[in-house]
Structure formats: structure tokens, C-alpha cells
Image (cartoon, rainbow, N blue to C red; front, side, top):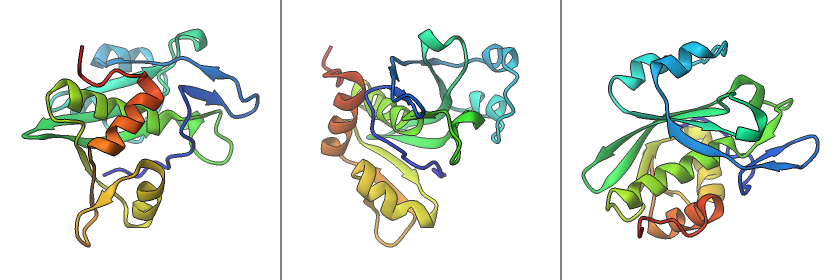
Amino acid sequence: MLDELIDDLTESIKDVATGRSYTTVVSPVTADNLAETETIWRFDWNREIETAEVYKLTAPKLGRLIHGLISIRPEEGFVWINVIESHPENVGHRKKYDGIAPNLVAYACLRSFELGHDGYVSFDAKSELIEHYKQTLGAIQVGRTQRMHLDQTAALRLVKQYFGDQHGNH
């Protein structure tokens, strides 16, 4: 279930206090990566690594800190987002960096293009965030359910925002 606020569509991540942007890298995460950090995550990522593709968002100029994690599962014709979590310092009104969650959603869209799924991404949203995801991500609600998806147009917009013109045509 997606329950992260999409705070700001940035080009990378942005320091809330200074407005300075930092280039990010999304890469596969391992249990060893998680063991190296002292972060207390809300979600059990070790369990997720066993059943899904899990990726970490880092900003090399800021050190080895994992700023966020995403778990995705390729399905027939789309990519499913299991869960996204921002590092605790990037949550709430005192967060240090903006752009973590949308950066990770954009990566799920990029993976969808890479897998030949035309950018289609689906997820379940908390009820109170459905309108928020419609406005910020361009997500489409499926009927009156909590299920949402990003179509090719929304996915292309996010991929271009965060990764330039990389949309599976390499």
C-alpha cells in the first residue's frame, strides 16, 4: 500500500532548508545494505527482499545514507508497487529532503518501460491519499477502489522529470 506523500516533484532530491538539489542513484538493495545502516525502518525490508525487487535511493554527494526504499513486482503488462518508504529523517514537517517518494515512483515507471510494459505501474493507495496521487502523479483511480495506476503519459512525465529521456529505448 502506498502511503507516502508526494511532497515535491524535483529533479533529484532537494534539501528543504537550502533548496540545493543532489543527484540520486537508484540501485538494488541487499540484506547486507540494510544491515550496514542504523536506520529503523517502519517496514520489514528483509522479508520484502525475498519476494520482490527492492531498490534503494542514495545521493552519492551526501554519503551512503539510504534516503528511501521501494519494493516492486513485475506483473503481466505492468509493474506493481508493493511499498515505498522514506528514511525517517525525510518524513513529516521537519524532514530534511524533498523528492524521495516521487523519485522512487519514477524509477518504478522506468523499470516498467525497461520490461516492455510501456510505463504502466499500479499500486493500492490509502483512501485519504487518492486525490493527492491523482493531482501530483497523474494517477488514475480504478473504479471506486483504492487501486490506482499510472498510464504511459503519466509514467513518461515522471521518468523525464527524474531520469531525462531514459524510457526503455536504450
